[in-house]
Image 1 (cartoon, rainbow, N blue to C red):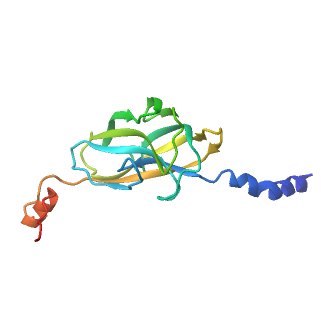
Image 2 (cartoon, rainbow, N blue to C red):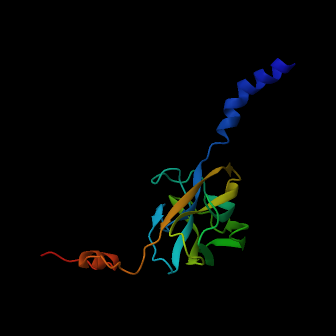
Image 3 (cartoon, rainbow, N blue to C red):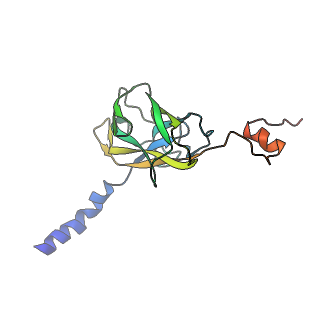
Length: 188
């Protein structure tokens, strides 16, 4: 009997494992219409990240149209992040409720698809001093439900936050100071 169970698992295991492969990614991005993995905000100033659903590769179209997904914002690695979500605005056509640190239950009105689906815009503000380089992410709690009632496992997207000191250091050159404030020299 024991060998029969092993034989069944080996025979049908490949099909079962295929159902558990991620088909899309959900998480934070520095851009609303594609996955951008890094943001360089000024330390102490509010900054914006986007909760997006996108294909497994940057140019890949989602293999389903989104009906519903539950997600959460969290920090990565070692302890608390020095920033917190102070505002969350849901995208048009998205009906959502919940706390971004516990669970946001999201449903869509028009079953959006394509390369990237914007779920929400999150404003972060610095709450603690100290760390100026860290990771933030949002991840699916339930997987996604397609409009055809198909279930989809999702990978998590992470954003690296690299805080930029707004004050030039004493030894900074004039070109470094101009670069800090985005002043570029045009050449004719």
